[in-house]
Image (cartoon, rainbow, N blue to C red; front, side):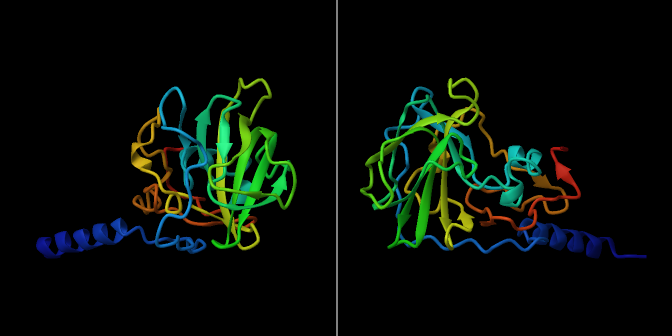
Length: 236
């Protein structure tokens, strides 16, 4: 007969290992952010119910999980940016000095987006679901805090569906997206988020994995799903 004390010890060890969040799927290792947070928020002013708010985190969100085979199928099933809710027509600003790379194409950021290269940092920032671009041409140099566009709606031009800014950081010629939070100087936990909580999908076989706003895997576009969980929670 097994020693009860030994069984308790084993259970504690297993619980500890599960708490480490050891991945059963090998994601792209998150690119290290600079020692100092190199970017500013892409929206001016303070977060509030009347200005802008956190609408969806980067990574393994519950919404991305539900939509992993449609909206997020090319992003390995994860939400590959941060969404800031706001009224349409709000000013969107460059997060750092850079050079305009793209204007207009969708990149799943309908109706249009602006992307800006930051050569000194080795990254590109993307500002999606814009109603209007303020920058005028590819190769245009912009400075941190300069207005580059106006926010729009990912569903309707009438701003009646889902008005927000989708903000991304990419590298490796835009083939990989990384979590913006370690890169951007902001008090993320204090940003107004009307839904509250940490709405990340749980894998019951490894419940602590990817539950932190800071600990989320990089996304390699076109790669295999990272969150095809056998025991998801909430069920979807």
